[in-house]
Image 1 (spheres, rainbow over the protein chains, first blue to last red):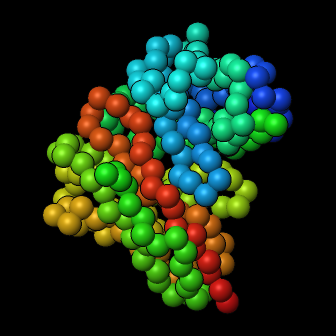
Image 2 (spheres, rainbow over the protein chains, first blue to last red):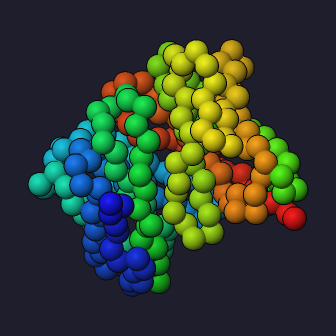
Length: 116
Length: 115
């Protein structure tokens, strides 16, 4: 079956612009996660959805970052007034289970964001 | 304090040999899960193995096994019979408690397998 997909695969934007990154999880997966991976680092948690609601948004770095999942499937990560420090690979993952279970997260290929 | 520590930035192993990648973790929550992921140069994160804090036995998945030493808070990944395709970054990650599924990742170990 289809895995997690993310669009675009690459995004180059100018400092100060607004960007949207899209994630399409595996069908039927109720949990969806966003991570950010900077060069040479492990992924860093941003936000986690269970269904339509954000169950944990403690990783969002500031109020320029916002994510939605209005129908409990596709999610969009929105970044306002982009800064050069936002440049990273943004990874989306989904999993089938409720919190605390032994469910691995299935990752998408990522969106490489470059802010010039 | 770091929640997940991977002290080996890089490791080399000869094909067909076994290799151990180190991971230590820090949590006061009695319920947690430990994961290992592989990230090839293509960038995708591939799940390898999972160990729950209450699991009595070490997890195994094919050539991968997890050496779980709870008292030492270590969860080392053992890859047996290394293959050239095992060359990649390897990340250890932890989920704390039952109320969240967020993963905390280490900085990774780059494994290179040579013929």
